[in-house]
Structure formats: structure tokens, C-alpha cells
Image (tube, rainbow, N blue to C red; front, top):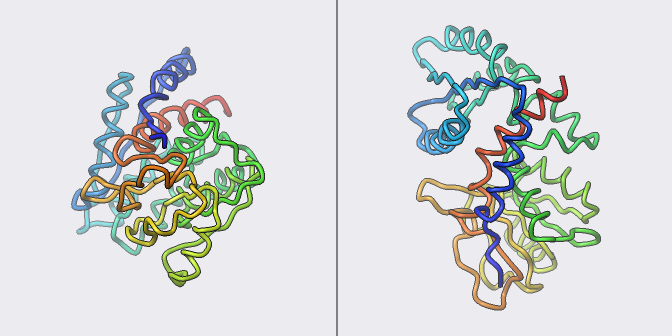
Length: 267
């Protein structure tokens, strides 16, 4: 059983970023609800990566007493810098903030234009977490051709992009989510060669559902610092898995920087 560790990939990713940076100037704009702990944990890693490359950034928080004012300031600044909108904002106007992001300054690839380009087959438009998964699959030589792959999750930043990635890698994709009946979800898991956990909910699967000795790619991260899996696989039950922490999340902040550079290259 192999632990699929992101730290083994990070040196080559840093080297790639430094090569892509040559001749390019970047700046970032970070926006969030300061009361959302998961957003702040996510942005802590983003800021660490930006500081690693000496990339300047501005940070701003949602003003719940003046949402329209916040939106106006956000829309103005989102046109000038690569923008990270840490979700959830916890307000009904969240979509208006997403719509204000300039697709050319959207390193998490959340805009409709960038999602559309991904769906049409351009893997340069993978969101950061999905790109981290791509790097792990490639580094550990996990071939998805003809393999049954179950995604649990359907978010625009992880679940749906993973569908595009797996299809691109010639896998057979089943996309599920937390509202699928437990018995059906477990049946699909027991028949799958690779499990991608991206629902943000723990406990949907158990050790008993690992019938085919799958690979498990855990994209979840919850407030206690663990992922969606909720258990450590017993020896011999899986071919490999990404631990949390230490797996996908180790690469995600760096992939945001790489995505910003790829967008600069697309200009």
C-alpha cells in the first residue's frame, strides 16, 4: 500500500513555477469571509505559497453591513490582479462576486468561460485542486484508461473538473454526491478502481466498501484538519491513498500560482 504524498511532487512543481515566472509579473487579490474558518485555513496556505515566490498580494474581507460596497470594490480589484475568492461567503449574493471575476485573472478557474474551456478539453483550465490530483496521478503512474472511477462530489472547483480530467484520461466516470442513497453509493464504490472523495462530508464510505483494492484520492479538508475518508485504510485494502494532511492539499496553493502563470501564457 502506497501513500500518495504531495511532498514528493512539490520540488518539481516549484521548479516549473520558477521557470514559468521568467519575464512575468504577478499580483494576487484575496477575498473572503473572515468568520469562515475553512476559508481562513485555505488562505493561510495560499499566502504561504505567494510569500515563497515573493508574489505581492492584497487581502480584503467581506463587509456584511455593506455587501454592495464590498462587491463594487471586489469587482474593481478583480480586474487588476489574479483573484482568489475563498468560498463560502455565506451570503445569497455569492454568485454576483463569482461573476465579477475576470476570466484572465481567475487562477481557481471558477468563471463560466474557464469552466467552458475545460469542458471542451483544455486541461490548462483545471482548478487548483483538480490540477493537484492530475499531478499526483501522473507522478505515481496511475493509469485511468478503462478504469471505473467514482467521484463523490459535484462542486464547480473539484467534483465537476475531476469529471473532465478523468474523461480526458480515458477513464469510465461515475459522478455521485452525498444525496445519493447510501446503498447505491456503496455499491458503486465496491465496483470502482479509483475513488475520488470531494463531497466535504465524512463517513459516506467505510473500510468494508474497499472491495477492489482501489486507489483513493481524498480531496476533502475539514475543520479538524482531516479529509473526507474518515479512516486509515488497512494494509492490503487499497493500492494507494492520499493522506490528509500530506496529499492533495500540499500542492493546491502552488497550483494556484501555476494556474495564474498559465493564464498569463494564454493572453
